Image (cartoon, rainbow, N blue to C red; front, side):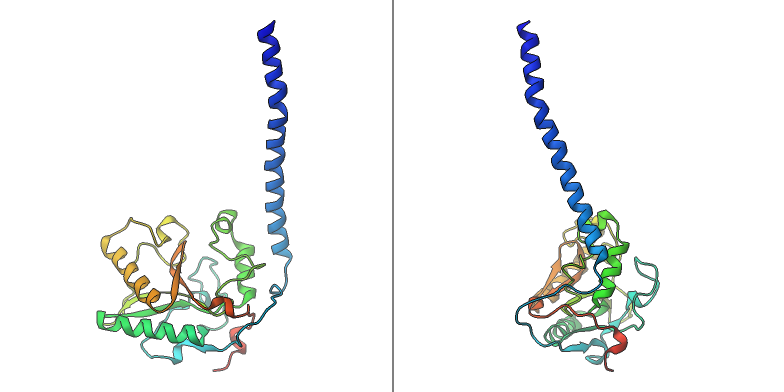
Length: 241
């Protein structure tokens, strides 16, 4: 009888804990769902307050003829499988563009140049990425939350890789661009030693000039002054030549 009473007491005490745990899990799930719904309903960039620098976007193709472009979002060769830009162009805020050019020229004696996949990205495109992303891609921030905006939206993030000056060929890296896998992490230790060495060469050149690599993408670099610029939503068609 005593054993039965003790067992009953244990079940009675454990019951509320289990109910509280289930309630807590449900609340977290509902909050996560609400976050997705609110982001999906947003139709304009988030309001920002404070003092910001005036935007001064520079077209990268005008900086140096040896800077190469492969603007994937102006083609079907991207994770969305459709063109997201009407024009194959790339821009950065002037200080970031100047730093990028220094990194590019520092790589020249080593036989490499920079191949640009993306730079400034209008906020509306970030919103389309978010709406099309899976829960897993959102969870690791493979796509930016439009309620917060992206550093690409501020003109202070660039996606890029290396190419060989002698042959013009894109250099092999541990993963493909925009690959959603652990191979894309800048700390990934798999793949060939040569690919990892190329990834580290790119990272060193960019970090020397004030860029920081993104934790989930070896190709994505944020410029140090990104907080000083507003989120922009100007399409390429409205940018001057």
